[in-house]
Amino acid sequence: FYTDGEMSLDDASEDDNARITSLNQASPDQSEFSAFLGGQLNYGFADTGTVVSLGFEGMPKLSLMQPVSGTGEFTLSVGYMEDDAWADPFLTTASRAVVDRETWVYGLEWDNIMDTRFRTGYHLTSVDLDNDTAGRRNAALKRDGEIHSLSFGHQCLESSPHSFGADLILEIGDMSGNAHSYNGYGVELVHTFQADTWKLETGLGIITRDYDSNHPEFGKTREDTEFEVSTMFTLFNLFNQEEMFLMLYGGYGRNNSNINFYDSAPITIGTGIGYTF
Image 1 (cartoon, one colour):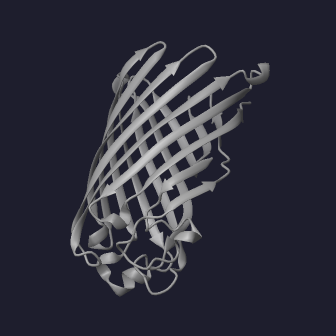
Image 2 (image 1 turned 30 degrees about the horizontal axis):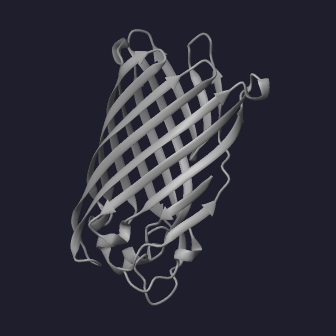
Image 3 (image 1 turned 45 degrees about the horizontal axis):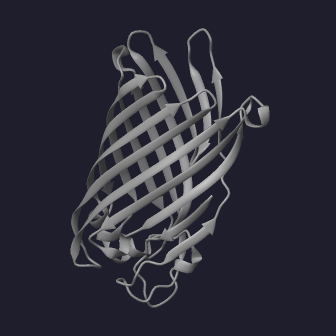
């Protein structure tokens, strides 16, 4: 994968972003190549229809799906991710130190509700920072806590070769610091075109986040609008091998904040070869 574009000053994924001289400086451009290993292993029980899955897309995730006749399909899941964050994102007198951030995501989803095309889901995201220097300096800046996400959607169109689905999202960030707690409202749209030998899936998402209280570093309450559009093209039967497929991906995301420190606008393109067995 190749990523290019404007990165947030709050982004700790790149060492080049470690030193800032002002909280109001322009966001730096990022340009990087990265490798991605993804996949999913499924094991099904014929008698009950239960499916146990272990996936690796973004984060390792273990899930259990159970169909219930006349009621729908229920899925429980748990995922884990560890990434980098700044100990004090607002430090301007020296290079910012990197600390570990652990994220657990627990999910419950109900698909095909009462044999309809409706679906709903709840996800609890628990975030823990190893050494939150900014949060110790000012309690309003603490970044650990929980994020509650509730979605309700409908598969509006299911007519070959097209399918189209829409989801409404309510997100509540219950963080330890009031400046990072928020209420979010969003929508996600996904369209899929399925041909005999290829598939094109396009997604569009937008969410607004209104934060609870004044940010002590900037003197105002943060408001964000995050937008993302992506498309994935999959070509099956690669090299006349039924088990192989080719993927081409392109995506653009943008976070517009009333605090420029949190603005970002990355573009990502990628390609990969997959194998099913």
